Length: 625
Image 1: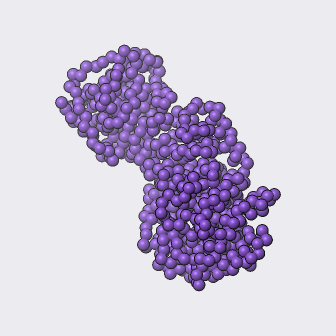
Image 2: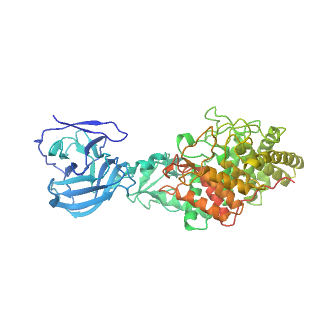
Image 3: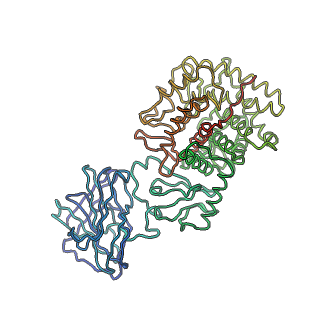
């Protein structure tokens, strides 16, 4: 018997056992309109030497859509699907559709749907013919199965150089004619997804307020959220959502009552606050960011950084920014819930673990704790207090005050003779040998915030103690100024996007900060248009831009009166949203979303920046008098 081999990028080579050319055609007793199994790369379909065809019959009298499971290593070219009366006669075509690979996103794999419109005869045998054209050497293959498919008709491989023409096979190609319901891609099987989209582990979120489920990139192609909700509209027109009480999503008809009720609830929640943005694009991005932040917030107040295993933990830093953004947009309950979780998970000495499990039971590993939480959490508490309804906010602050006191006292005690805190891992989650700006600047914001909160509650001794510590720390941070607020005061660890933490709404901008922001931004700017967290010679972030670090500069410029630069930087971040409108953690060297999407920290920063740019900036804790 003859042997055909196909090798696809990133896949094993498959050996296909052929059958004699005399393999008899069969006539199905019932219509044969599809075969879903696609575990094997069956036939190359690259013109001019290759193509494939699959016999089928139908019950109906009209064709509206065809689908095949295709894998392409080529990023450019076209794929044509035809329905023919005669397998090898191009003149017998009754329907034809050509799709452009570049328009599909380039190299990739999945179910590829071809819309067509043609009359057919029920019971008659037709041939679904597929052929691709590309100038690239990379393979393009139609997948299927080597297993027996009861009632199936013949698959045909056209390989001019090997067979000299068409050859019949007992294996069966994966296809659907007039696919409906779960046969449509995006429901139980992925649509054709470009390989570039897989740089991100997640593409979106579904939630019912208790449980959360990630939308995988392979199921985001051609999908979109129903406006103002976390209900996903699929390419088939049906909806996917996470219903109340369920831990797994389900697909329902559009206008399903349960899904409609969730949409109404989502929109009512948005309407109860504000969705800032001076342009339609910004408002749409902020709306999506708020809904995604809400999906990452658990009922107990834990705020997940993202929804993929390595991100499904609550960092005090990420939660602090989310609390500030929720508070600023009128979502007081969500902001206060996060702060309550911080109070419950604070360690006895007043510090926090680097991150905790979402049930609040403790850290998932031995990752070293990070001192910047002692600044971020009091700063977020101060931001919440300033936006909270006045009626009972003092009473609610008193509930949080023991947390603030322990955090601020630890921060004050940590300052050395030079006024600076000890070296600690920063938001990079990497240690430095000496104090870094990514720890010192948040602690300054937190001490000033704590002092002001203490004064508002009449806690004069606390206010004085933390104010004194803030002044000492501010004097110590002045050692960073001559070099433009680098990562460490000795200048041995390069520039750091945390220079932005010296700007509003964190700290009152010191003299010379504008020049430091400019020079740091230029030093960290990457060819893809975003910025790296830093350029420490001991550690490289490679070609990946962080959307959070880039957003630091947008927020800092908005807070220091550089509206044009803030707008340009924010718009770059928004341009990197994925097809569902979600903001990714990083952007790779090719300028594509990567890591996870959404990232709650970036969502929060975008919300705060949009507020500042529309004239509603977050206040900055006052320097202690």
